[in-house]
Image (cartoon, rainbow, N blue to C red; front, side, top):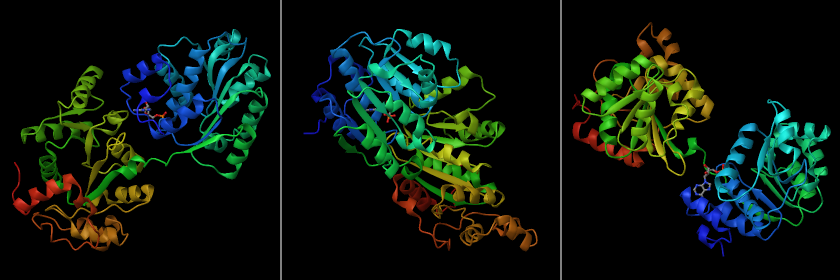
Length: 451
Ligand code: AMP
């Protein structure tokens, strides 16, 4: 039987308390499948990516073993060795051991390159319970006699596919050769290419296999679409989208400039919405206050510049609006990654005017797909959509057409949802927000403007 709660797992009470503190109630699939196997002392081959909860899947049973049998680690050695490819991963894993092992007495240290060796040598002198390390620097220490792996009881090889991509195979093999024969080994990789299988066969002894379907990436979870329109109509369309979004979760609007973000806030607030901006010109405490309000759901709309939004991790963002198209295609991916966090799904809508069309084409090239064109608004720019579907840049066509900006229709909106001749499907009509927006359009056929 696969456990459905952490209570059902044979983990020590302090571990269960730490999980409750983290508000974890249900083991993720990799945890539910791996933890019972690992508690039995078996080797494990896990096919799983970051984001599946694999860190807890291996650290909980290991911490449980350290709790059950506490003893002095050997000098210059570790009872647990976790090998991972990057410093960031090493730090995260170490942090997870600390979080989950809060109620357990154990020592740990980190070893990676790019920082001084001496503190690492000192930390290893009397041995540690848990050593989280990257291969290159660990091998240096071993070669210099500062680390000895003969006391390892648990060996975790994490993100093996990345490790091999980064050229660590030889280092890993040398490290593995220095480990004692008797130990419990855990091996995690996102894929199982032949070279990875070979390595697993060398290391693992009659392992249990656990394979977790890759999670959908953020970009796959986010329902993305583009609105082609003249830049003069962006504000009006924005107000319609915000109206449709009322009561449906949090919205982030991206603006390219700080000045633009401020102006936008003022104008949407004067139209009866509640928004605040975060950007480089606001002080850190101001930004933090705004973010706190947003996270707590007391502020429905956040207006942000790209830089300010880095690292904003808010679970309930259901809509990202790109008021303008970022010049750098990568920024688009960061922007839409602000929605669809954790298991949630979200929508992202981008407003593209003829002037920005070239940047928009770069985005579709980067994400390797054509996004559905939203026809469900009164400002649809048919000519631009048409050019886009033919793979032509608006600017090229401007030259061809003797200077008519983008060859586009200018002036009034009001073409309505049926006016577009785009051959694309609008898949976004199926989602709630689009339905809400659809109702707004129905009522007005695009002619009633919010002011
Ligand atoms: P990992 O794949 O280990 O990097 O974990 C991904 C994220 O999921 C981390 O932020 C963990 O804190 C979180 N997490 C791990 N296990 C659980 C769980 N059972 N319930 C909720 N969140 C979890």
